[in-house]
Each structure stands twice: as structure tokens, then as C-alpha cells.
Amino acid sequence: MNEIKHKLGKRIKELREKQGFTQQELAELAGIDQRNLSKIECGVTFPSKSLAELANALKISLPHLFEFEHVDLSPDEMRELIKDKIEMLKDEHVGIIYRLILTMYQ
Image (tube, rainbow, N blue to C red; front, side):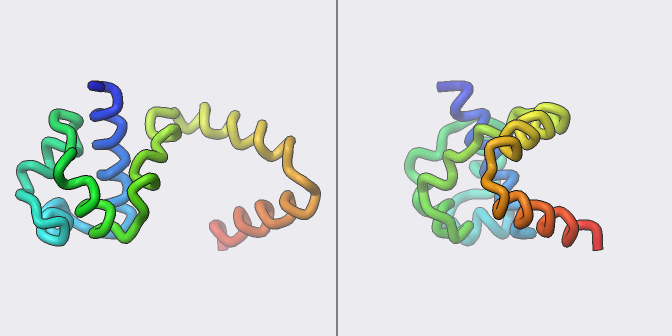
């Protein structure tokens, strides 16, 4: 359970920062105390009563909160996984990924 709390906390923080929210802003949107959100993000507590509210405040589905398989990967591990996944792509999808990467550097 501790591992899930830790990963979920990191995932919530990742999503919060991606959307440009402070802890205080997200806490207000979710109707929870900012100190409680801090404990959730640190993996100290599990947001059992506020999961749905956090997902709604972040405008994502509840299952999306639990997509944290990438959270503990180093950049090098992510690069390796990306290489492996690209190897399995259909040719037309490789072009899409290529164009996506190009847009990141323009």
C-alpha cells in the first residue's frame, strides 16, 4: 500500500504541475485542505475520500490518476522504453512520432 500511496502522490503532483496549479489552488478546487493535499503528494496519506474530487478538479478520469508506471523511471529508462516501443510501431505511426518530436524543438 505504501508504494501505491507514493506513486499516486507523485502522479497527482505531476498532473497538478502540468496544469499549472499550486497546491492551494488544486486543494480549493477539490474541496480539501492544502495540508492534506501536501500529505497526499508526499505519499503519507491515501486520498480515499477525495479521489473523485481530485480527478474532477484535474479534469481527468479516475483511472487516469492511476497511470503512474512512468513516475519512478529515470530519463535513461524512459529513453530505452521509448526505443523499444518505436521498434514495434507501424511505419505510419513512426512518422507521427517523428513529427511530434520535431514540434517540441521548433
